[in-house]
Figure 1 (tube, rainbow, N blue to C red):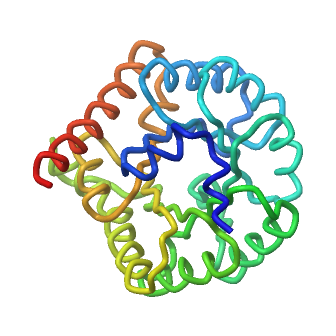
Figure 2 (cartoon, helix red, strand yellow):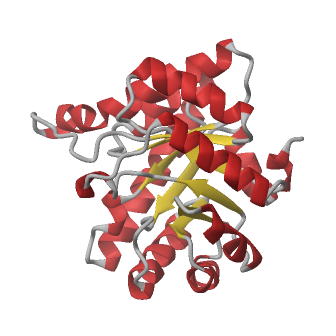
Figure 3 (tube, rainbow, N blue to C red):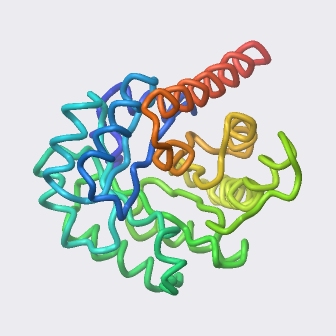
Length: 259
């Protein structure tokens, strides 16, 4: 069954064109004012998708403010059904970055079990699953294959929340994004070689400099969180989303010209 066909048409096309921009409010962000600001910036700035904490009231708020399809993120599958009934387009297990500073880590078997549980609860709903960056790359790749075999429709990468840049300017941005870019390339190649067509989202530490690298590495889209949701100025948030949208559009145009 191709559950991706259940997604809104424009969202589905953004996956197919490998031009999806997802703005992430935060799995642990249940502050309505913060979610409203992120939602407005995402909607006006040209994002394709909004990723928020799994709460029905936040789903209503985010859809109303952004006008975008909404994905809800959680690590408790029982939270997903009410959010879907509230209007969420699909669900996501992860991103796990917010748990690492608390000493909470997810291994491959736990992520697989969460996937199986979620699929049993929601057999017809699109499911995205994040591959923990704490795993070695070969284990990340194997987990991605296992996730698709167990019902995941989308795979998302992440990088270390503590990933640091050691250089100024563009080089520093590349250094910060290196973990998730490497994961995206490894997982993308593994899925391709196995003949799996599950779209891949690349998230964590990306910028307008590294977004083209993520798409070149095989991602169908990118997820942007702290670059937007940590800002305290609405105009700055909007400006970041617009720059990210422009980076994706420029890459897509260049790709079309080359082809």
